[in-house]
Each structure stands twice: as structure tokens, then as C-alpha cells.
Image (cartoon, rainbow, N blue to C red):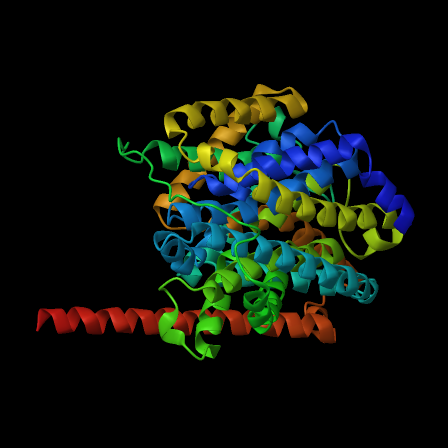
Length: 502
């Protein structure tokens, strides 16, 4: 199976698509406003006619390139290309201002590469064992895990627990449109035959993450200022062997943080890079130097955000639960190709799983080579104005959405969810919980009904299973923790306002 998985990605076609995927991902990650989420969502329709291995390999290449690409603008523009590179600006840009942009880029590229490779190792060793344990799960456990994922994402990714959970519930409601998975009853179709099978996941994905982002960028006030990119020159990788040895502890700690946070549903690199940077500063003998341009901060941020890639794929492949927003889109890609992630995936389609592992390794090496040797090209892309990019992206969105089922209805659905996503952003409702609710809604519904059928209507059966009870308990604790956090923030704001009035 291992050999078959390796051979499935070592074809000329697969390697070519992965190189293209990594390059596009880096471009989307480098340009502020265009994220890895948009890259994967936008290119998802292009993989529809591919074989499952080729399609998933291409999406993984986009993922790896998109997360890493943010380091380019973080260092050279002092603007994070993606949320996963926010902390990279703290020391990367000051290094560039001191005339050491090449060193900052070299450290960031190597940290991204090493962090991703270590997380792939964790994925290879942890995922199969977790999948074997998950084979014992029944409807009670899968219901509890799905509910836990929705609750954790809704509470942790938003400043308001109410808004986060509301977004997740709205996503579940959107998934209920169409024919019921058990019983076949038509729901919420309002007489439209096109909605009988529900909303297709692809138009929803493109609408929420591409169309809505285009709306946000389009209403931003235009700027006539020329983008200033710091000069850089990389000799070797920009740092010495002694400097590399001094960062081993920082690297391992940050990688473990990235992997651990990546495993938690819905959090991902956007949080791990800031957490790793904060921990590195706390553990440093010279915390006062952080923010002035030292490689410690760059290593911590870029290692953690890329280490979250392998971590986020662990729950996706073993339980069918995405670890972050991009893996939620990847879950949609797997479903489009007829692949059901979960514990049975390792048993029934082991060659595909190993193909994914090898695709990750190859994409990571491609990312290292492209970012090092193609840096000048990616830097030039940073200066492309948005009024050229946006029309191209909107056309690709419409063509890609239409091309899957050849229905204009899907284009209108993507526009509808684009408007919904735009409105949610303006009202400060998080979008990822809605997407996860849409994807996990059928899983929650089916396992709830099956569990009630097995227990003959006994609701307490859902907490009699130790595993299910543990996940329900963690879900409740997550809500309590977030509510307490919100109350503390509110009290702090009220105290500041009262002090200002005095």
C-alpha cells in the first residue's frame, strides 16, 4: 500500500500539478487579502475532473503554498499575507528595515519547511493509531465529536460565544435544505426543484470564502500609494550554522505548539503563530529584544503556523472533522471526489492515505525550492493592483461554480452565500463555524437519529458512552470558559469607559 501510494503521486502529471498548486498558493498567501482559504476554494472546481489522488494532491499543494506564502509580505511589506503570518511581521519586518531582509526570508523559509516536515511526521505516526481507535466509535461518539467540533470552533474563533454558536447553527440549518438523509422528506425547498438535493458544497465554499472576500476588498477605499517592498539579498539561506543550532529548542517547542493547536478543531495557524511567538518571548533570556528584529520571533511564528498543517489533517483524515478552515474546504474536496474521511478511510483506501502523506512531503520540498529560487517573481506579484486581480478572480469563481454541474443555479447559490458571508463579516459573525456547521450538519443529524433508533428514544444513551460523555463535558466547559472570558472583557471595557468619564 505504501509503494502504491508513492507511485500514485510520482507521475509527471501529479508533480506538475503540485508545482503549479504550490506556486498559486504562495501567490495567494503573499498578496494581502488573498488567503489560502480563497486559493483552495477557488481552485476546487478545477480538480473536479481529476482522479481523487491527483485532485487531493493539488489541493494539498495549494494549502502548503498558501500557508507559507504569507511570510513574503510579512517580511517585505510588514503586512501579513495570511492570518497565519501575523506574528511573522513582529520581527521579520524589523529585520528587513535593518537591511537584513534576506536573512529574515531565509529563516522564515527554512522554518516553514522544517515545521511542515515535522508535522507530517506527527500525522504519519498519530493518524493511523487514532483511526484504529476511532473504528470502535458508534453514533453516540460521532454525534458527540461533531457537536464538540461545532462548539469549540464557535466559541474559540469568535470574540462572542453567542455569535460563534449562532453562525454554527445557521450552517447546520443551511445543510437541512433538501431531502432528509433518513426518511426522504423534502424540507425548506419552497417549491424550487433545484433545491431538492440541497445546496452543493462547492458553491457554498466559493461563496463564503471567495465571493465574500471579493466584496470586502471591493468596498475598501482605493489607494494610489505605490507598494514599497524592502530590498533583499539572500546569500545561502541567510543565517549561520551556529544561529540554526541556537534555535533548535525554539523550533521544537513552536512545532509542538503548532501541531497541538492544529489538532484542535477550527483553530489552526491563525492562532498557533501568535501563541508560539508569545511562548518564545516568555521563555527567552532576552524578551526585550523581541519586536526589534531577531530571528527567534520569525522561527517561532513560521514553524508553528506550518506545523499546524499536519496537525489539522489528523482529525480530518481520522474522524472526518477539519482542524482548521482550509481543511474544512479540503473536506468538501474529498466529498466531491467521493471520499469519506474517517477511520474506515485507513482501512478501505490505505493507498490513497499514503498518497496524501507523500503528496504533503513533495509539496513541502517544492515550496522550499520555489520560495528560495522564485522569490523575485513572487515579490513582483505583490505590486499587482487589486483592480486587475478582482475581476479575474470573480470570473474564475463563476466559471468554476458553473462547470461542476453545468447549472446557473449554482452560480446564484455562490452569489447568495457570498452576500451572506459578506454580511456576516460586517456584523462580526465568524464564517468558519458556519461552514463547519454546513458540513457537519448531516453527520450530526444522521448520528442523532441512529442513536435514538438504537436506544429506542432514550436520550440518556448519548451520555452513557464514556467517550461521548467526555466530549460533551469538554463542549460544556468550552462554552463556560468562553462566556467567562467575554464577561471579563466586558467588565474591563466598562472600567476603562468609567475611568475616561472621570
